[in-house]
Length: 229
Image 1: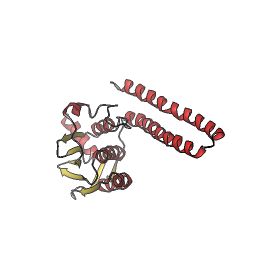
Image 2 (image 1 turned 90 degrees about the horizontal axis):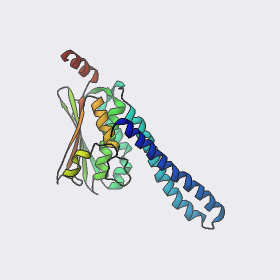
Image 3 (image 1 turned 120 degrees about the vertical axis):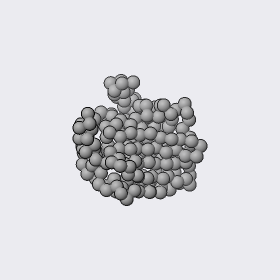
Image 4 (image 1 turned 45 degrees about the vertical axis):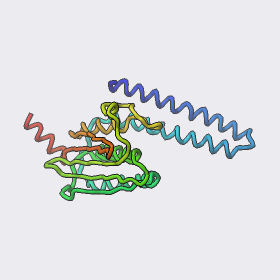
């Protein structure tokens, strides 16, 4: 599926998500006007509306993200970014009954990259690890400096990614989750390529590890590549 078809599909999904919101709002208004059991009906319909609204928001967000090709390179503290991401997801981590361990390479200083794209990739990888983990399990988040590059990895002891699904993990709209959009890893893969990096993973019966490597300084990397080319 090319980018044009992907965009058409997303727009179609947004429309499909919007229609139930409109219908349920209309029904909610009628129920509020006529039914003596207003509270129960409101609770049930509003829960559905929240799920649908979240899906609509996620779809719209993914349309914008998937089309973002240019890089906005600035210096930032990678480890501070990772800590803030974990803090933002702490409620979800607690809900899953998991715990997070951080193992940072202290050789890594300020990173000169597109912070928004790096943050998006890391956020998606960490969210996927949380979704896959079992209650009481540990998620290991680590960074390692290798030459002029950085390796970010997130490890969990969730279910193994089956062999038949490995080639489809980064495919747009592919998901095994009931509420998933199938765009998180596709966007992450695309952004990693924009950053002159890569995402890969290993998965077995013991653990699943997603690895995201990228140049520590994108501007230096591109200048060096231009000289070599």
